[in-house]
Length: 386
Ligand code: GDD
Ligand code: MN
Image 1 (cartoon, rainbow, N blue to C red):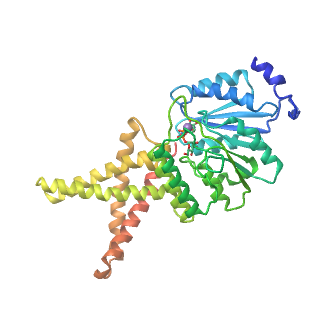
Image 2 (spheres, rainbow, N blue to C red; image 1 turned 90 degrees about the vertical axis):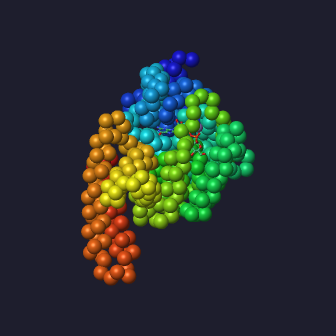
């Protein structure tokens, strides 16, 4: 059926919303947020499936695309031209599933919002059941779960991924006292006002939006889990990589420590610690090659700073990752920031160094001062928000 016609009569079935705004547009009751990165082949199929599954419900879909190189935005826009229920947000210079979901949720005004993968792995026929559950009882959040009775990970996850996913769930349950069976699920529906209230607390990085929502709510959300089978991916590939996993563990730690330190600072600290090993390894190699100590120490510092820079660019600031010429400029500012960091480090250590038997105290104080400086200055200069 022509989508213009579908617009006119598609929602008129039983239970359909007759809610027309003054302008004659149908107000959506349910907004389906579809975060996408390189899903050009999947989006058109998915919109067709949503149209079938959500017959009788006033819905809209918001595709939040991070400027995919495969042209997902254009594909989605084309559909939006003939189907007013489809909207597109194109984000430039940003990456991150959680951040995309948050933006999609905040762009919607529908009272109920669902977050669903755009790659056809999530079963769209669950949506009406989830909506009914939210509307029927005093439930705030419905999670489509692969882990409650009746739900399976089907063919959707490799055995290694399934193992990793179990470990991640176990840790979340232990550390954060989250009782959800599948806190890593990317498929859920929530009352928008609840999500909106929690939004300022959420981290935009990584894949863990659900866990973040639930743990940030601190037990105030009424949650229901429903089983579903995770489908196998047909087109394109998964973006869940080692970095996403590291980031997830970062969130667990940060939440566990009560958000005193940010995920970013933790990551920055871990990278800094790895820099110490890089430094020592480089120093040893140079000394073995008969390089004079002062020169070797200076060169090793540059090797460590360079390694830290690239790791931070990949991990800590992946959402603001520098590319092309900006890498060079970033590297230079990072060297500059770290050089001042060394001064801060030595200065503070000196101040604290009153008694030789407490050398470690002065040393640690200096190192912390240096790290805090490097973190603050590099996030303001090297990876500043554009
Ligand atoms: N906008 C945007 N930006 N979308 C993204 C990004 C991003 O950086 N990364 C991934 N996505 C989109 C994908 O295009 C897809 O629609 C959805 O988010 C899920 O990404 P996948 O890369 O397909 O994830 P997966 O199938 O490996 O992981 C699934 O299982 C995880 C738990 O094991 C997802 O359901 C995850 O949400 C879930 O946490
Ligand atoms: Mn997927």
